[in-house]
Amino acid sequence: MLTYPNPDPVAFHIISWPVYWYGLMYLIGFLAGWGLLALRTYFSPRGFTQDQISDIAFYSALGAIIGGRLGYMLFYDWHVLFSNPLMIFQVWKGGMSFHGGLLGVLVAMTYFARKLDKPFLALTDFIAPVVPIGLGAGRIGNFINGELWGRVTDVSWGMIFPNGGALPRHPSQLYEFSMEGVLLFLILFIYSWKPRPLGAVSALFAIFYGLFRCTAEFFREPDVQIGYILGKMTEGQLLSLPLILVGVILLRWAYKKGKVVV
Image (tube, rainbow, N blue to C red; front, side, top):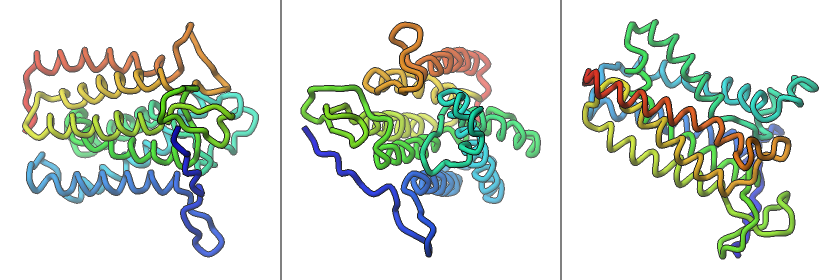
C-alpha cells in the first residue's frame, strides 16, 4: 500500500488571501494549453493569428469555468444548488464537471466561430489537442484535494485518503490523469500534426475521452450524493456514452465528406 502524501490544499498566500492548488492547477492547464497553441502555429500553421489564439484561449477558459461549475452543480449537486445557490461561486472547494465545461466551451466556440467567420469544427479541431493538458492538471488538483478517490481495493498501490475511510482505495485521480491527460494528449497531438478532415480531430477527442472516462469510472467511487444509476452505471459513464456515439458519427461524417483542414 502506498501512503497518500496528504498535501496542503493551499499552495501559498497573497497577503492573507489563500491560493488553492485546485484553482492553480486549472490556471496552469489553461496557460500551458494557450502557450502550446501559440507555439504550434509557428511549426504547423492553421490559419489563426496570435491575437486570435489569445481570444480563443480567453473564451475557452471562460466557457470551461462557467460551464464546468454549472455542470457540476446541475449534474452532481443539484439539491445544493437550489438550497444554497451561492455555492456555485466557491470553486476553490472543488466541484467542476468536464461535461459541463465541454458544453461551455462549445457555446463559446460557436460565438467565436461566427465572430471570426470560420467553421465551428475548424475551431474545435484546433483546440482539441491541448484540452487534455487542462484535464490532466484538473485531475492532479483532485488528487491534492484528496477528493474523487477510487473504490476500495487490495492492490499494492492502493491509498488511504483522509476522507475516504479506513480502507485503501484506488488512486483513480491518477488513473484519470494518465488516461484523460497524458495518453489523450499524445493521441490527439500526434494525430492532428498532419492535416485531417474537418471534424476528425474533434471526433477523436470525443471518442477517446468517452472511452477513457468510462474505463476510469470502473475504479472510481461514485459520488456519494448520487451513487450508482441504471444498475452499476455511474453518472460519469452515463454522460460519456453519448459523447462516444457522437464522436463515432462525426468521425464517419468527416472522412465521408473529406474536406481536409490545412
